[in-house]
Length: 310
Ligand code: RIB
Ligand code: CA
Image (cartoon, rainbow, N blue to C red; front, side, top):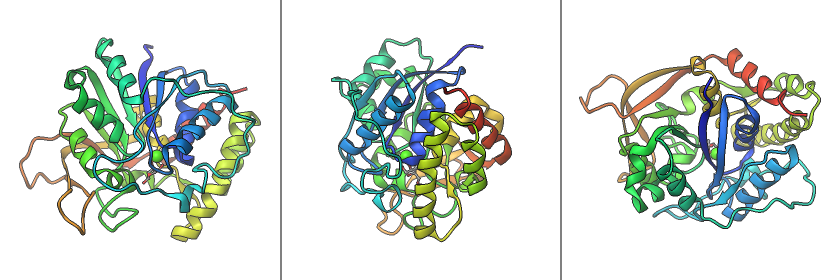
């Protein structure tokens, strides 16, 4: 089967780190590069985290540093979930892997322009890098095969009642991306909150007994602690890996094609993804919104990915 060519744009972040583990070794995916954006923590920290994960488990993929801040909004971080480093919990070896000299946005532009139009973008953080690339070089837009992103929600947000973190962090960037006209799969909180990394999941993955599974355990035990402190629930939702799980097996998600608009004018609802599932507005559909997830199949995919490591 032909590999899916992927650029993973992320802000590691514990759940981003699991998405990196999944995309880094799965035979269905050719990971062309990891581009990093400020989000869960500042850019130097999210870049360091991406490099540490790749070096620790032996993912030989270039890492590119991107935007240090949103297009318009002031930076906001999620240290209360991901810790001071952005990936608190695991201890890594001294870091020798280096980020590439090329800026992430220039890597995205160059790679797409030189492609056959067969590259999937997988953003799992704020959409700043993707929006900048589209504005800097609009010729890349028809070259994007599809965008499979973690962000938004049909229902409640997770930072404000209206907005999910990735969209809220840079609503202007999200509006640019959702209006680009290319196929978008939106993996929002409606499905990601259903894949909760309970202790029995951690125990199941830990029994695989390799570097990736031990890293998963160390990351998730920290992540669950902060998720419980913040949201009073057991088992943190494993948001970002839903994107990669969908690429590996699209049947894991139930999608609905609809019009999605990003609220950027309202103070109360800034960053909301208004998903017109009913079609009230009779506007052209611009995204496939995930409305359900096969939870058992999702964890089977996570286990399959972690087993690929030594
Ligand atoms: O709202 C969840 C999203 O925000 C995830 O991508 C998480 O990593 C943070 O970036
Ligand atoms: Ca993320």
